Image 1 (spheres, rainbow, N blue to C red):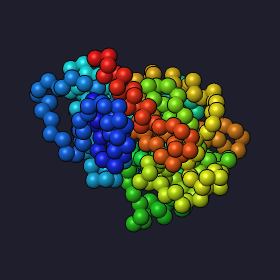
Image 2 (tube, rainbow, N blue to C red):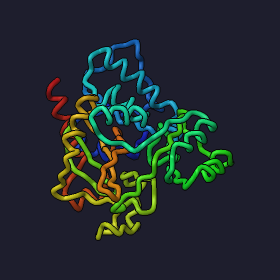
Image 3 (cartoon, rainbow, N blue to C red):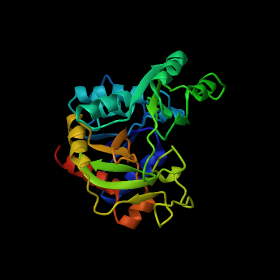
Image 4 (cartoon, helix red, strand yellow):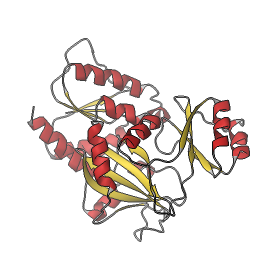
Length: 304
């Protein structure tokens, strides 16, 4: 198996599970690996874990290089888990929303803007509070809340303004989560695995990886105190739609995030094809996403 990624920390739990299952693997770190694309690629299962937030770790062009490598592998008919389609969605909220909407999955009202003037004029189309987001981002990068255009103008014209790495900023209606949790639904082999509730009362940076999560953070919605809690006996009519969406876009591993507003309307706002799992929540629930992925990779290797 070949793991395509740019973050050793996030990849370690998967490597541990592959070792436990005696699955041979090679690490392709996209900021370090040296590959000859004029040659024939090795035979194996290639699992793409490229992340939209790679630039925040100094790997600005890792997704672009990954696209090249995935093209090369696809040209040789290699078995890829989360191929070109998954990568394209990972690095574009615009594409995520288009593809979600095609499956009749509701997303928040969003205007995609290029340049400061465009961002400011987009604010005229919102009558209620709105947030800014980056089109290509992970970990809540660039997410800020504004009550009105005047507040936005102060930010956009000030020294604190952060442009999206791809130059596309999103203005999005602010959905007040009620209850104050967001739900992340995890899928492996394009099938539902589990849903995890995340306390959303104080932050926009929602990253379940242990490196981003401190156990001491108290969570009012979860008696265990961890910000992440796996939901027992989770049921939701959205699951079927999500599975259809993943199959339609050839995505096999993903975490999809949604929230409820005070009217009970579900808004889906993020698709993570480079998904991480929270070990504290998993231990308590007796589940392991990385083990499940490792088993999936092993099964796919057996088919070659």
